[in-house]
Image 1 (spheres, rainbow, N blue to C red):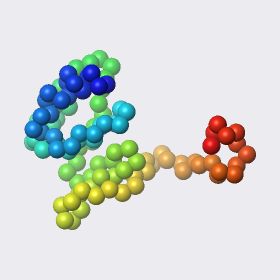
Image 2: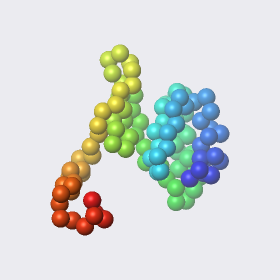
Image 3: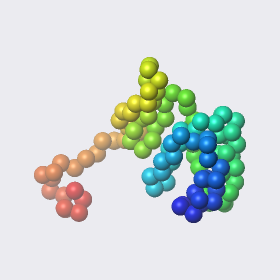
Length: 104
């Protein structure tokens, strides 16, 4: 992925992105260019490789990234809160459970 970024992402986002964060296969971008430019960038990005495709969410108010919801508050500041997907079942093992240690 690092090579893909160097070739297809970094040269095109200069002066258009305030924040670019990647954790494994999740990317968070704060785009400062216009919306049409962002959509064109994402469309072009998805045409660069036959098996690397990007799903994306665009919002001026809030976006989920990993287990975090990033949003803009009433004072126009970025804030975060915990985000849980609707499919999250909250299945955790108690530390004193009788499961093998490899599952704890």
